[in-house]
Amino acid sequence: MPRKLFLVAYDVREPTRLAKALKIVRGFACGGQKSAYECWLDDADHGELSDRLESALDAREDSIAFVPLSLRQPVTALGVAEPPRDPDYYYID
Image 1: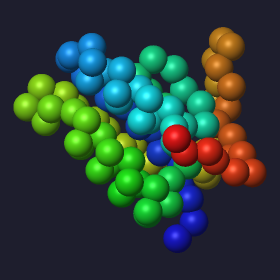
Image 2 (image 1 turned 180 degrees about the vertical axis):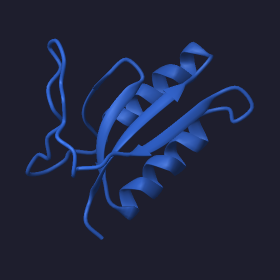
Image 3 (image 1 turned 60 degrees about the vertical axis):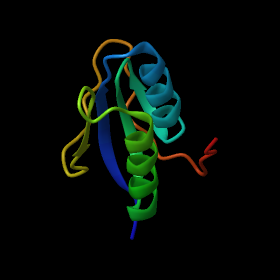
């Protein structure tokens, strides 16, 4: 399956888990800021990212959202934001 663009956003209440979530999501991200990142994911990547976050977070206190973004609509970037891009390759740590 081809990769799809998702907005991956999280709300983590404990600083150690927050740092882990940030490191995990940034490994898949092509752009973003704070706790919301654009990620190009195929089914395998989506599953891996979801599994890694599930093991790092506490489901009773933390939340994560995968929001599919439509590429049929033009991307609007405000301020210093850059539109999401699909690089030639990804390095996953």
